[in-house]
Image (cartoon, rainbow, N blue to C red; front, top):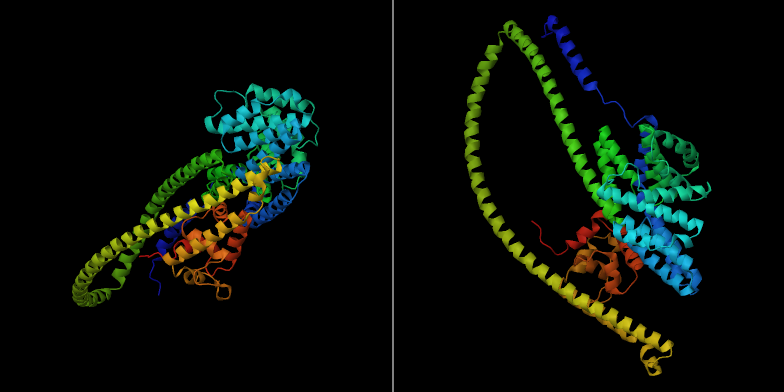
Length: 577
């Protein structure tokens, strides 16, 4: 039976067509075309594989470090230190600075002033990247340009560009009309005069030399684009060249090409395990303009993670502002969507009006609806009685809830007191054992210092005192024994609770009731709040790599998700409500 009058059907169909047309209106593309959308999908896939890429990077670094610590030849140690700096430079600023210092010390010992200059140029890069801009400026100004080779001059030019680009990120262009100050412009012009196309800084410096106007940018694009398109987008240099090409396209007002090469630059950074990144952040900013807030937020979160890993002050500040812009843009988008929804609501009201007319028509045609209403009224009376019964039951439940709330508040206060006591115990234990660990470290350093004096033929009578490291070994064993005993007194169920986080076949069982294995000892420190692998390694007097490998191996045994494992360990023995 057809309940809808035929004369209303065309009108309703027209309204629904209007609604469909309203929702079909989209935003015109500014930076995205089909090629760039495909590249974004590839970038998303590459981001999901970044942990595996980082693990390969760590393995390569571990091999280099092993060779460095087992090499006695000073010149070979210098080059290994340089290689380690190259690996760490855009990956971990703290570790990179350690090997810059070691390279400088070795260059000084070998009497190589040119190598000292290379180390100082590398130091300037790290100081700029981590936000210590005044120190970076002093470092560069202290160098003698006249004594530099052509390769060093090119690197010196690059470091000045890098410094002033970071200054702009902090305090803006400070009134300049060009992309860089006159001093840097002079360095760029001098570098371009004698730079060959195969120079690693060629594309980077040539690109910066043409950040002036659209015509200059087009000239540089014709020079750099073939170089960039031939690259495999796997190295830091590939990422920098693609980034500078994207900036040239920005000067040339070509938005799609700008986005393309920013994406390719970000992909090169990921493949090279580069954490000092800018491209992914800029891609996120452009996606905000395109309304792709979810993907932009994902890219910002990755950038935050990498900037924190690299310890880049500038990048973290930039990302905080970008995050704020994302939130504001999302808010504005929501407001616009609300306005559209308001328009659609009025259209829906019109539809409801038509449906109401149809309903009145149906009522006139089917008077039997009155009988249904009377039956419904009788049902309502019965329902009201049920509602009264339910209301009485609800009153009883409210009283029970009040009693439970009082009991819950009392339990929470008790738990809070217990938590304060436990935290005090944990701090006390951590402080005691930190003091013990520092004492052992100082004792071992003292022994080594005396031994070096003996080797230098000073105070021969001290030789026998310092040859054997038994003192520090015994102190470490005593530290382990005391730590295991006291920790297990406070957390007697730690081993059993920890094993609940592991698969049954991977559970750990120490030899004695009052001893821990190295693996359990590491996670005992995590339970006490010491989650930094470097600090754990220092506390236990083992290598950072050993701590990292042990923690990685243990997470692979976990019965809980790997990313939740550390938090689960820290919650062992704590009450929860």
